[in-house]
Length: 193
Image 1 (cartoon, rainbow, N blue to C red):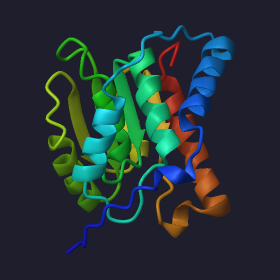
Image 2: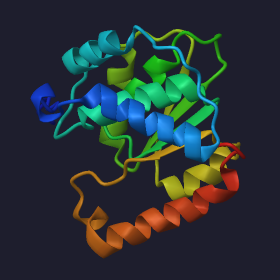
Image 3: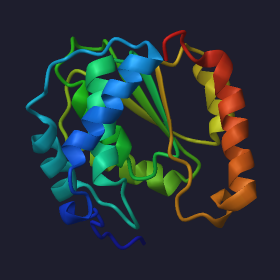
Image 4: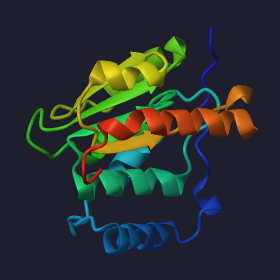
């Protein structure tokens, strides 16, 4: 049985979080040729607080700047299909899904993939706490190398978060796994993904 602890990093670790994330998003738009929406969602802090208070996180979570970055990137880019590889307990999936809650029903889908079925079970429970109605969220407990073929659709946003506390993902071996995932994903990435 897993012991649950909420291990979200404290805000004091990330001064100037908002301005740094805005700068990164502006650079993506300027140099990446992606036209982003320029409206600020008022829901980010609401969902951050909800995720931090209700998600069960067993060992770590994404950083506060990464929470903000994923939320705002997804909110502004409006991907139709997002894949999160190495989703763990679903924290990144939660921020991505929350950012799309105000779209038309079934206009977007997020799929979280993790090789560990226990993590997928936790992720499913965590996502239910957000009570999202308009976005389809699904989880797959499998090696992501097989997921791209089985999904077989154009991916608008791909987030590789497959490091975790697994020693296989560290160093040279981990780099090779990331490279193989990227190579496997390339044929499925949409033109402006």
